[in-house]
Structures are given as C-alpha cells and as structure tokens.
Length: 135
Length: 136
Image 1: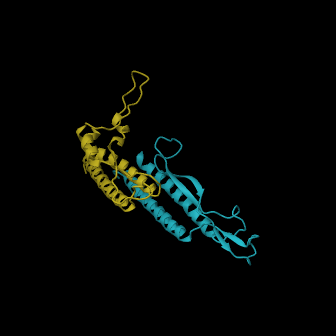
Image 2: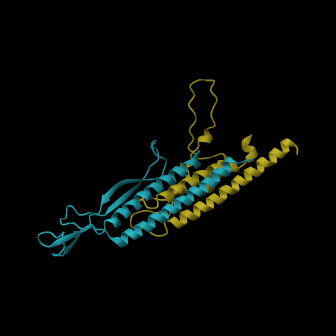
Image 3: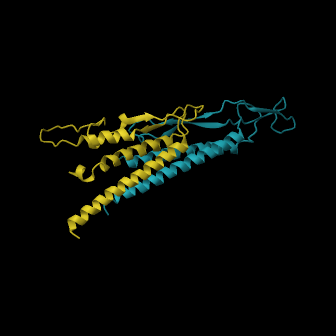
C-alpha cells in the first residue's frame, strides 16, 4: 500500500541516501593513498527498483518459528551491486582517484535531489492529511 | 539508517585531518631543534591514512583512519658551525629534516579537507532533519 502512495520516491530516497554515504566516504578519503573513488549507478538502480527486477543484495530475516512473519527483504537491500569506480580526469602520484571538486559537486547535486524527493513525499503526506481530515 | 553513517564517516575523516594538523604543528615547532648527534635529532613526522573497509563492526562503515605515524627518512641537515654551543667534536650541528614549505602545503590541504567534511556533515544534518520532519 505504502509503495503505491509514495510511488517511485520511496526507492529513490533510499538510493539517494546510500549514494550520499558513498560520496561522503569518497570525500573522507580524499587524502588516503591508493583509495579509488566510487559512485552509484543511480539510473539503473532506480530503474531496476521501479520495475521490480532489482539486483539489490537482499537479506531476508531468519525464521525460527513457522508463525513468524516474513520481513520485507527489500527494506534491508543494499545497493552495492550498482557501485562503480570513478574514472579520474587527472592521474595522481599516490594512486588516489578522488577529485574533491567533482565529489563535492556530486554530493551537492545528490543533496538537492534528495531535498526534491523529500519535498515530493511531504506534498504527498500533506495531501493525504487534508483528505483524511476533510478540511 | 544509512544517513547517520555519514556523520560517522565525516567524523573519522575530521579526526584523521586533526592528527595530520597535529603532526604539522609538531614538525613546525621543532624546525630549529638543533642537536649535536644524528640519533637525538628530531625527524619530521608524517601520518599514513588508510581506508576503513566495510565489515569491521567496531568502526564506522567506510571512513578513514590514521594507520601509523612514520618518521621521514630524508637526510638530516648537517651544518658546519664550530662556534655553535651544540657543535660536536668535528664542529657540526644537526638540524631536523623538516621541510617547511612541504609542511605549509600539508597544513593547507588538511584544513581544506577538514572544511569539506564539515560541509558534508552540515548538508547531511539538514537532510536528516527534513526527513525527520516529513509530514509536519
């Protein structure tokens, strides 16, 4: 039910949060020798998430009793199969491929898109609330 | 929730950069610590950064840590100065192998990286707050 109310934004928010984490990790390792910057293939991650044929590495909950309820395997999904290494524009001597300016731009872009997703969700919730209250 | 992890990642990076700033301060403070033999002379200290790989439970997923602090292997600066009170029998004094220009560049790089991580934390905080306030 919740899936149909929020539509694609639920998956989008999840993927954006994980992408933010990966970009933050790149920026944190900007001075680590031999660190290779990574990024998430957002397009295919979201496409797969919306079409239901995702490559998410899901982990279902273990059941020790036949009456236990199945957990939603997708809620533990990790996007690690969509990770890709960034191609650096300039080589560096210490083998680090983090380019701060690019990572900062990507992080900001991702932040704006996450804000947009949150706005969509907020609008949806506000609409539902006014429908429920009948105001 | 994964967003809270970003704060840990940025905090680990800020800690690593603080250690780097500390070594810079130590190196700059000791730039004129003259000694009369090679063993006792201060050697420039440099931190070695390492990525925290995923799967280590005691530390945040991702992030960076200071693996070790190594002493620079660059040759010490020997100076012939027989009138110096610290001069050895041959009239030489030993100066630390601190490269001031390198240290200044290191300091600038460390402070820029620190600022970057503060920005990341601020952005994440705002997004987290907006997520918490969804539907209000």
